[in-house]
Length: 263
Image (cartoon, rainbow, N blue to C red):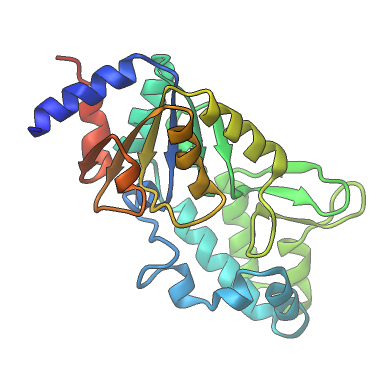
């Protein structure tokens, strides 16, 4: 099928509405955030068995707090320095038009919300949010607040690191970044709601997801099971390509804005 004909078919599918978008690291990469596993990405620079687990991070807190400080500064500076790209804005526009019912994302960078999307299910959490380990209350910080914390951490003394990385909640407990680490379960309510959205969708739009990280990777199979049309937008074929009814290979930032244009 010719490219423009494929675009028109996909536009018609999206125009029918009840579309759920499932997004992964690929969409954020186009904003300048390397994927975790690529060369130069987070897990290329830091050992995930240490920096991606509660046990590893706890050990660093006790014995090498300066290393966890450097890790926190690195990951936060990388994320707060970027902005949404045309793909994020196109998804927000499709939601505004009533075509997309929600976005289910594996990303923790808050870029969908910055672009204007309202119904976003964050399966792996949000790096701007802190959650109290004791009472579960959540607090969302602004970029300005995070920048102030990072500036403080860069010059902080060793014994002051804990107070900024794990600040106290009003209940007396400690707050931690509300992101999912290796070995932790996904937030149950968030995943259940995302699951129900996919189960009831007419179409599932896959954007920048490789389909190898579970349980998020199970959602396209659920969509297929209930008869939804699956559309994949990816710079290269993925583990989900054989499942897709329609595929466009290329950058989401180039493709999604074109899908907004009606012929």
